[in-house]
Image 1 (tube, one colour):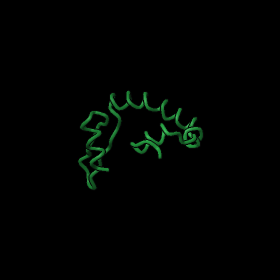
Image 2 (cartoon, one colour; image 1 turned 120 degrees about the vertical axis):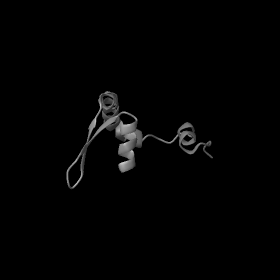
Image 3 (cartoon, one colour; image 1 turned 60 degrees about the vertical axis):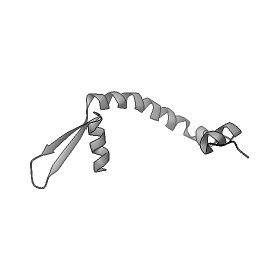
Image 4 (cartoon, one colour; image 1 turned 45 degrees about the horizontal axis):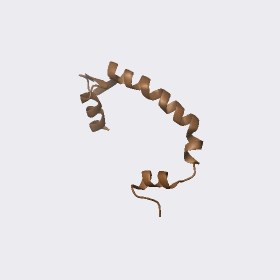
Length: 74
C-alpha cells in the first residue's frame, strides 16, 4: 500500500501530509487532479454497477473469447 500511495502522490493524484508526532501519522487527500479523475470515473463505476449482471451473464462469442484469451476460440 505504501508504494501505491507514493506512486499516486508522485503522479499528482494525492496530497501527503506527514504529521511530526509520535507515533508517526500521515494523512492523504485527493489533489485537484485526483478530484478531477474521480469526477470522471464515478459515473463509469455507476454505469458498470447498473449493468453488471448483463456484463457478467453475456454469452461468450468468438470475438469476446479472443479479446479475453488473445487467440481465436477453438
